[in-house]
Length: 370
Image (tube, rainbow, N blue to C red; front, side, top):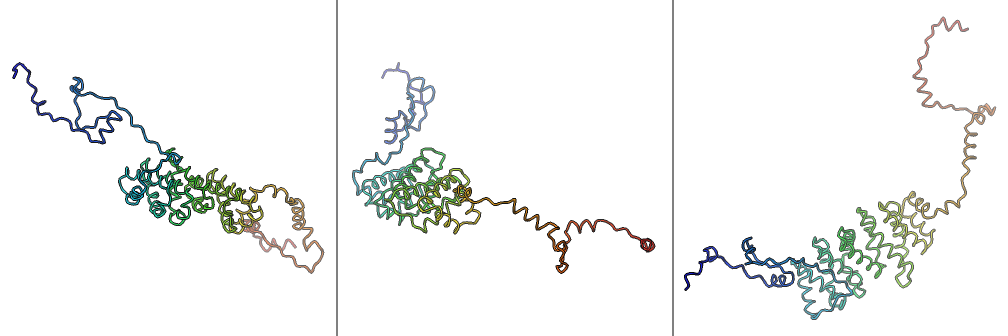
């Protein structure tokens, strides 16, 4: 052995090599240039060239796949089994994959998930409360696919709790995150156009305490009503349903906090008036609303009717009142002594009389008057 070779420092002889990265880390390293290790090199090691610091490449965020761009699954049976077993998994990465697989099943073979619709609805209610953006976006897209699937409409109407799913979806339609808000709005609009006769599921949210949710729900109801009134291919609007909608939309139109809410309420009342008749709608509103609300709706929606009414002659009425209250028309001035005259003392006169002290006169002063 050559003794001239320099001896390595003791600390370098006992230094442990950095652990090998995991398969996931190796794959990420190959794509992004990141090196996953628990060992942090020192500045001297970096400057000497022993460790090479690679450039950090930002990880590209995976965008949501639109329904039109979904591709079929390779093994349908395995996908259905995976969805049924792991639909409520707590591993959110696996939950995202389950939601994505369910979207493909709903699009290409909805009959396979018909028995799972109730569980899918509960899963969506849970996912729409999740703070993870990827889960929220995929849940909104799955909600749109499920609610617009015509082959599953009967099963969805029966097994899905709309009173919980629709408010959660409306809440995401006013989210601060634009990509989540857009997906939720797209799901609601698709549902309204696919099955407009299910507008009743939005009625409870039209008068929500959150004014933005109320505006969103009222807008969806107006879309449904436009399709029901203008397109004869859809189910007809029943009289009882029309009466309920007229009363509700009258309250939305008059008492909505936002301009969009009142605009949607007015649009619904106009569509009902064109479909039925203004008189019928007014009678329905009068039967279910207060008198003041009924007159306010008539005055705001049909101002020409108010203009067509004959104006009241206030001048003649005022003259009649003056003549009836004048002393010339009193019973005493008529010369008929048989008619009794009752004079009422007013409060102001009584107060003035009581407040003025009377002069006390002696008996001699009284005698002098005669």
